[in-house]
Length: 233
Image 1 (cartoon, rainbow, N blue to C red):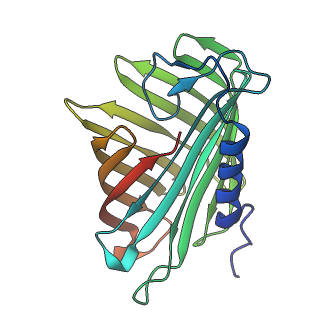
Image 2 (image 1 turned 90 degrees about the vertical axis):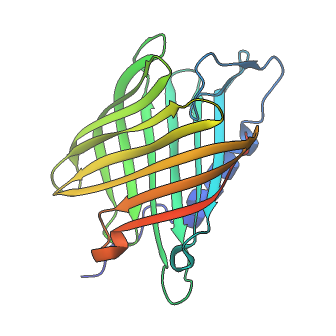
């Protein structure tokens, strides 16, 4: 049986993230957020809709068989709802590629204290190598020193057993930073990334990335690339 059509095609995912950028253009009175991480870098003065917005992307060049591009973004609505996600696309190159993987997650911030938050959440996963599915459970943010975690536990999914995972941002000495995510999707499948950044300019990084996609088979599950990352906002 062929996989179901994606709930959110990667082209539409990119369009949604770009639309969030346009709608969330900072208003007057913008200040820096004391929590320095990719998903909470700016906080606006009181706004009718948005409290913060983060949008970035990167492209990896090192492996010509799997030259992939990724776009990610996060937005907060009235400090009550976090909505974010990413889509990564491996185009056809040298007879390989032609796949995508993406996630969109929404979390209600029912309880917050400082940098800690927790609330009910859902996450939609779309992949070209399996049928799309949705996860339901709890998610939130936590800060341990300078290490930022965006964690999730999803005991219920539409594809069988549940799972969980975390996004992380770990500052390193000097212009270095480590970030990424690791998710266990149930049924022995995991997906994760480890990104090592070196900051060249305030918005531009050189990156080394390790990506594991348990939905793929054999040697294609693991890829290492070197590329550039740019933060739009």
